[in-house]
Length: 74
Image (cartoon, rainbow, N blue to C red; front, side):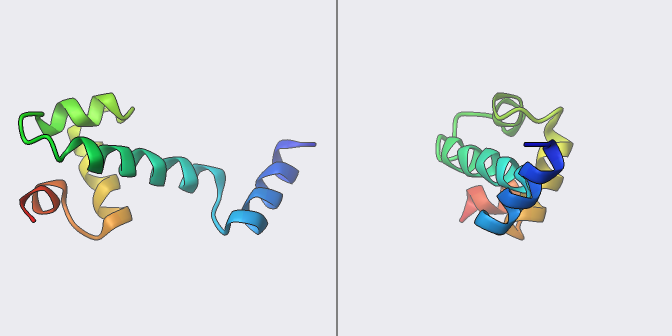
């Protein structure tokens, strides 16, 4: 199976691209880690595979509709 065939079948099956799926999973893991108020957002970002806290914040807001700080405060 070619990479493009895989991506097409993946999206038909799950309704999102492989990258969207992986990003959503990383954000889900980050949200669980943020329940620990002692972890800095930068530590959470790096542990979940983001390049830096800014990249994490942009991606988190894109997926959840709110910033990590607002999510953590709720």
